[in-house]
Length: 535
Image (cartoon, rainbow, N blue to C red):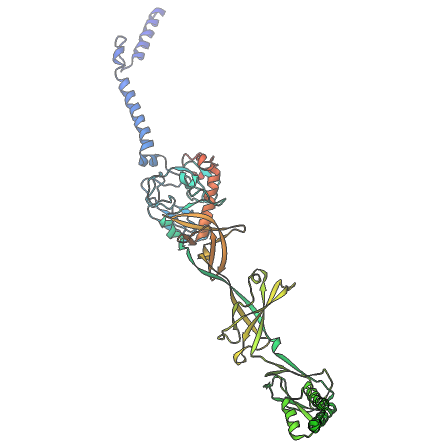
């Protein structure tokens, strides 16, 4: 076969292969284009419908793109929280990572799709319309945020931060570093938050101090010798003996007393003789000598009854009996029968214990309010049933350098000798009795430089206020400013309100308050974040 013939057969074969079994002949090119356009239109319509369903149908969206926790539309979105730490929220039962308490189920918790349940714990509102979510924060580290729902490294959901929380609420005069807290009624029950009403009543500051019973120094009497002599007989033979006023204590033999008795009898006889004298001066002189001799006996503590007996009998006695000057107990005894005594020597000490003193130590801040004459109450460890009423008798002028306390003297009656010297006793008295606005002491949060109380403004909202405290006592505190009578203050779980208020204030500072509501830049969360979280 020639080369020209072979070339013609090759061209015919190529044309037949190009046409194929489904292709028309070169003259039928318009029929091939009629079925391509419907197919392309159907494909584009299907893609468009898928895109619309992906962004508008939550079930289809969750089916195609589930969250990191494995939740989908077919699963029930139950949430669990800690009663002590309400910001801890989990999608499965367990224990709180902070306190170890069992997590409790939240009815109607928000689903991952962003729908808010009617009574959500994190919503902070039971009703009132939708709230705009600015961003989500890490429940354990508020500095870590996300624009979309996410989970932390422990599997806990990020907590939504709403626009009203970031902007803050209140009267504009909140303490620095604090923000108003909106918890809702259900969350109040879970956290155990309770309120009490501020009322006007009288309050006093009780002071209780330990003291020691001592003898009343004004009721201590010492029997001393004023002349030379010897103890002939003792009627009081031991320490602690009870004596009554006028009771014989001892008999003394003294040459001076014998001479004084004779001198008085002689001067008295001279008065009798000078009664008939016509000289007035002589009569007055003899009378003066007798009176001087009698006075001398009295100055030697010779009892009046002894002098009267001397005048009646006219006989000098060898010994003179000394009587007890006061009633009381013999608390000191320095003599025995036969002891020689000298002028100025202590013979006996008699103490009247019908009234006693209590020396108690008060701290500086307590002592400044004590005044002489204030009423005080006393009880003892030895006799718990004893309740005596006394008064402040004296306030010592100096502080103790060792204990930094001020000694205060109280005076109490001592019926039945219940209070014995050197016995310990507890003394209590009320200071600063005033009338004003009073709240429970548990409502106050001490920060070191100020005192904060959370006022219940209703509907589960609590407003922090800085208060000025006056008198405290019996579990209550007087409020000088910050809370008015009739307002309610949080008295239970207010430490949770304190932490939540500080946290919200920090979030407000992060977002710039009302002037800058945009959320902070999210930080990397690795593989634990939810979809689209910018992680």
